[in-house]
Image (cartoon, rainbow, N blue to C red; front, top):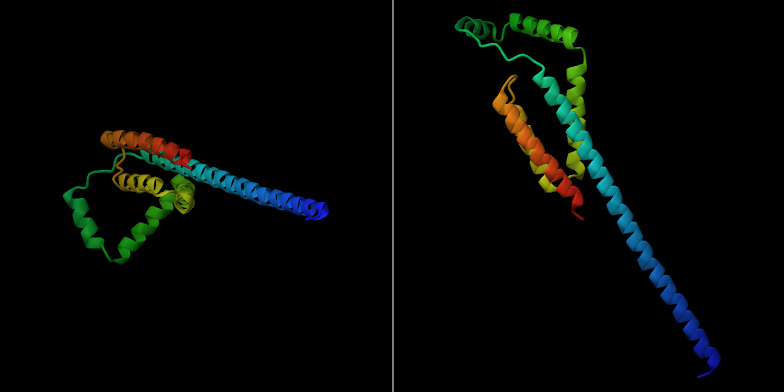
Length: 170
């Protein structure tokens, strides 16, 4: 075989190998960039969720303990249920609540819902399990309940550690 042909084959092989190596390298770089972007988004979503959750819990702790209903209260509630009086009282309650607290409670609720929705879209299953636990515990919340506060502190510490572990996973 002629040296010109051998040289051309070697040159073409070198160019082909260079192109192949570049394609593989660029693919790996793009994959690493995607993984880093996904991790940043997960971290941001976790951060937004924890901040919204903390704000909602702190605000809920600011409310007084619910009043104990007497037999008269229960009788009155039963008698007005489904009547125009119930609608009127509900409206008055909502107006007073808005006058006293403004939009803060609604804003906190909206913030928590948005943060939860964002995190659920990007979260691995382990993180979603922590979210379910927090939601279940949140439904048990009663103002001035010290046992609940201890449960919340324990869950929050567990959640924080679980979120860190989820961020460390590839």
